[in-house]
Image (cartoon, rainbow, N blue to C red):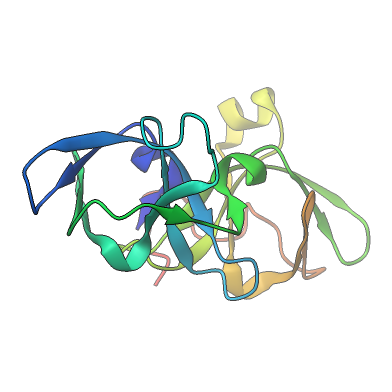
Length: 164
């Protein structure tokens, strides 16, 4: 499992010519199927921030760099990781559960697995941050995440435990 935050800022290397073609600026998700559409880059998207490398042209999201099969830049549509961070989390019954702090991705960086949720600084320090699995999400809206009533981020598996 990977956090989207760990990917942002990594250099992007082209396997075809061996050049560094930029840095990851953001991760883009498909709005409906919650799959990764691609990455936006600092260098390639200076004037056109919606252009980036589609997921199918990315070879590997490594620990220290992202490798692309070739330098293909296209317009990417979808929700950006930076647009999810800070969104409010509520239950279907209207109970506030906190805010999204990060997005968890599967190891191959193709699908959203869940969300890291904070209930404030004090709670983060005393209890740690919680996790809400994608399977418990009812609505993933533009500005809010609505989860099943019985779901609590602090009853879900904690960081460091397996989400599989």
